[in-house]
Image 1: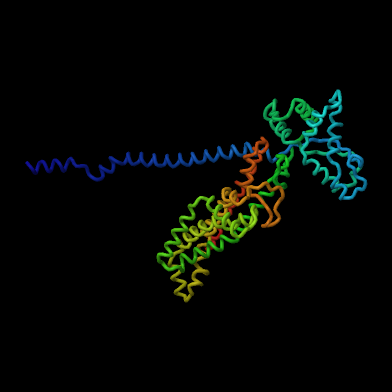
Image 2 (image 1 turned 90 degrees about the vertical axis):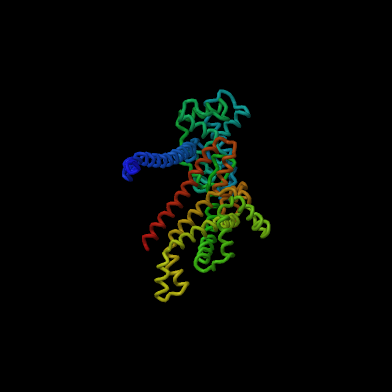
Length: 439
């Protein structure tokens, strides 16, 4: 009887292949769900990226174009208060009077009576205050235009710029701070073809300004470039040297372990802590000036070093031990093994980590705020010791400005910063492939 029960139990127990086939459909469904989760995560990230780029480009593309008004300017010596067409007198000539006369003459047919003082101010405010510099440059470059009448495109005020750009999107347009009378003047210029949109070179050639139509990113861009040069010049050799010593030469003891743990912890420290450290050391102790690219570069060097050391050590560890053994077998010294074989093979990984660290430093704002890089700097810095701003800080300042025109300039500056970061990451990929293929 027990033998029959045992045979019956043996027949009822499923075989291994039956168990595998029974669970095969379940495993396939789990595999399908896992792939769907992965594809969904990628699509979610791609959609977020698409929304981000669409929003930034949609708001910022208008900053690459500016509105100009065409006026007939009478460059007579009496209005300019110039007696001798020397460059010194032309630099200090009364260009405001010339533009004022041109505006009043241009709109004289529209006015039935003489303008009140308020209307006159409103009319003059339609042209940017920076237009006098364009007129000054033109007359200094071509002094033969003195005592002649010329037609010139002058930069419009930011309110006119907003109104004209919004008119292209809807018929009503965004009037903003423009009065009804000012809108009539602008509409008349539009009907007569005296208003045009042209590429905004000022955005790339000028420094910061309180007037949106005169504000540019060159000062902040040069400040970021100088800081990046300091960061690359200091953090790359120091970080590579530290990584080589810790990985190839340092003895394995508690002190080395303590240093390694602290380097790993420093890589996770918030960037504003490095700003406080730079404020205490470079400005508080060494009494260095605030808002200069040298101090900014030193602070970013402190922040970037842990990233470079960690990535470089990982690249050195990835070099096969057989390479070292073969070099030792041929009689190479320790230094020859490291410099001639290990470091060249690890260089693609080192460069990739370093460039990613530099790109992260380029986009940092918090540590730069702590060392005074938030100051309003109009001039473009000429060297490492000139007061300067940085591109992320410039974006932060413009985002906090109440004028509507700064919204599109904020997005345009973000586009420039993203283009810079994408170029640096592209360089990292190219270097990795280039150096990796060489070995």
